[in-house]
Image 1 (spheres, rainbow, N blue to C red):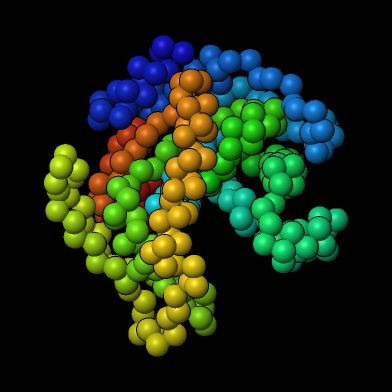
Image 2 (tube, one colour):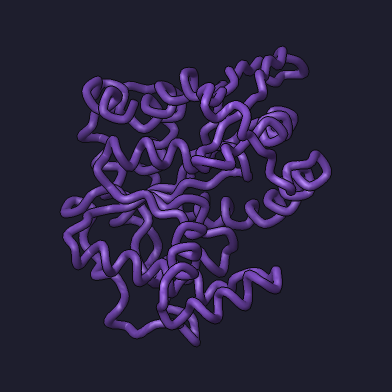
Length: 293
């Protein structure tokens, strides 16, 4: 475990670590992580549905991306999934896909969502396990989970399903997050997301300066922009408070396993993407950068 932590510290401090060292980081996480506990009582799917555990050297990365609502987990996870050739799996997408299907959980999920209730851990893990098993059967190797797990219970159950090599925790100062969330817009016609906020925050009180250019829509979408009903300052700040309360135990769970890598976003995508690649020891693979652009 100490060896993995040294590699993580070296990456976070900008040390030059080769691609071989990155692979070694993954294998150390798999080899030195604490033994996986049996799945909790009432595990929602049969043992044969669980992922067949493969040594890290025989598969691609299995990472988790965490971060506050609006921080950009989906953006960076999606880019890295294309870069590394692994599926990007967001549990929100799994729920939406199931709702649109005629699967056995569709009616149950519809009732839960219509009543404004939270989807249970058991249902989420069930959907995730089936997605991972389907990918394995189709020859997929590795994955990047987006925004999951959100509780220690979910993390413990996930450990009973598959191995996690590394957890990347994206961080951004709260005042910037709020401004970013309030600038979000959606095209009512094509459904694409944009952001009209031009964030230019000066560094003060030990906090770094941050600049983020707006992500403006094309002319054909400009007149069709709508704002999410829940993107008000009060709602955004409340979401951040709830997330922070829930996330700290999860961060601690993975920190104790030596798998947590915290990354402070220095700005928008042009500033943050190259530095994230550097931290993940992918900075020398120029062709991969272009492929993910």
